[in-house]
Amino acid sequence: MSLVRLTASDLTKAPSGRDARRRRSDRIMRGVMFATAAAAVIPLIGLITFIAVHGVPFLSSQFILNSPLDKEPGISNAIIGSLQLTIASIIVAAPVGIAGGVYLNEFASPRISSAGELLIDVMLGTPSILAGLFAFLVVVPALGFSGWAAIVALSVLMIPVVMRTTQEVIRLVPAGVREASLALGIPVWKTTIFVTCRTAASGLLTGMVLAISRGLGETAPLLLTAKGTNDTEILNFGSTMNAMPIVIYRYAYAADKLHIGQAWATALVLLVIALVLNVAVRFRTINSRVA
Image (cartoon, rainbow, N blue to C red; front, top):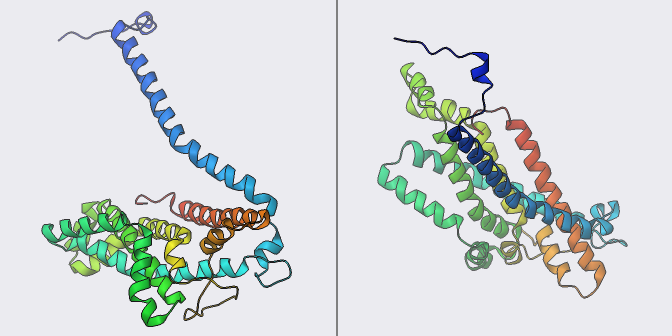
């Protein structure tokens, strides 16, 4: 067997034609990937900038802290209402979504799992107006226009998001983690809850944040259920409640520039809340292996 010896001069030689083509192809593909990523990010940056430019001139501490009934009207009741409805909805949706996702991934037969995944995909693609109509036709006749009806509508939209995310992050948990737990004699259900789900906890949290982000921005379900009000309702889900998407919708159709500007300012506040929530959770889970 002969060994190939490389000298310093061999290493500094110009690359061959094949190597040059490979490097050229690599640079081209890197450029294509960068351009594709920029094409996806630039519209988002443009949207944020557009909202900020139109909303900042109308943004003030009074606008955020005052209610619509004050001398200088604000949106404090809408902020409080949005946060209450979203938190209550995720409290309902998270246990159902996580349990459903775990069942489909860990315990269901292949046929049931396939049918469940198809149903989730259909629900993810369902327009939010249909969830609002469902609550309007089924819940509102029983409970009236109220926060409870809005919670039902938002929960219907949040559950499939949580279920899909739960399935994906559970699949990322190494099989060896489950096998090690089972080898110690731990029952399957305990392994699933205290080992598998705990390992994927950061990913489950990310899924809940995605669901919250969707619920924060939904307008149609809230118009058909919560309806909106000028009063500040705190934990009074039995009455009509206000929310930021409702304010944006109604102010955007106003005839005066002040209300239109306040609609932009409300959109900016909503955007900032969603952004802060996502950044905070991402910072919390950035070092996790299953996020």
